[in-house]
Length: 430
Image 1 (cartoon, one colour):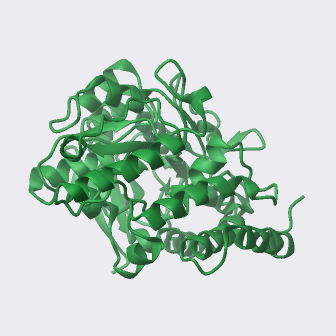
Image 2 (cartoon, helix red, strand yellow):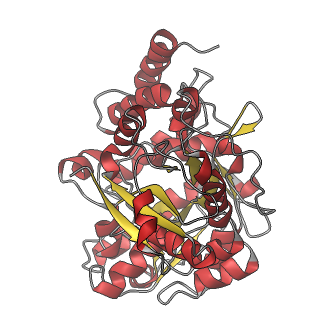
């Protein structure tokens, strides 16, 4: 099945269930019981959706929230099809910001500019198009560096201290690999997942890159680093990762790699996997991602990283009687109350106030050291996927470039030249 429904209720009358159905169908009494449907994905392993639904019904006991569980791999395709058929959910979770313009240009999102957001919330700009807000953030992931303290200790290498540049990262990954091998371990110094963002996301953020410039020389240094780590045997090659379908959770969780740059969502996953015995029991920490140069490195500076928010938009065809309830849901999901609940399960919310951060590191199994706290709270996070109708097309070409470089099929320079030519010919940039 492409989707299934989970329901959060708060002692509602059975009559409320009669309101369940397609958006835009029927008339709803805004003063009576209301049912809202919210899209989600992998609900069994992604608890944030049900947590927000339950928290909202506690606050608004006359509203039922149904979470519609979509296939994560086909999420945007399935949502788009349901919206076109008039059967889309009332609240549309924005899984990837690069599709916001697709929904907005298709007339499928309601203007939510009147929803007041907490001061200091991150990610809101990603949902603004020409001064109008089409969704609101509830989650803001940022990429950080995870490291295995036990493997560092075994290798006799000092832990990351927040001052690393990428040159430092490469040097330490090589040193870790050499020392671990000498100690009889098969673990590598680092792991780089196969996604294009593991290289391009950092280059775009830290090298002042612009995917709409049509010029991509700024990627070169970052790919040179990745290729060096592959060639040195300090991380599994791109071909090995893809052919053997290696997972980043398994490589780090099973102590096959001492370091991994990854999004902050991995905190919740790693904690739960260690608790369930799916990952080894070892002490780990979080550091800021390495920087392009020393100007943004160190605890006295603000490190630059990347990451996109996740947010909620409202179906433009929602029944008018549900509109206010839907806006209340968006406001609740962005609130400090909801952020504290999300932090309590290891999710990085868009709002990082003091109570939220306290809840985040209060999760059993979360690291407690000062550097981990600094890494989670202190960073400038630039978007991975700019909100633009051409983002998806450009990124598809850059993904081909990524595979071409790391698979060794073409040189870095030739792959970049080919990408520049394709973007100019296939996409066209103003």
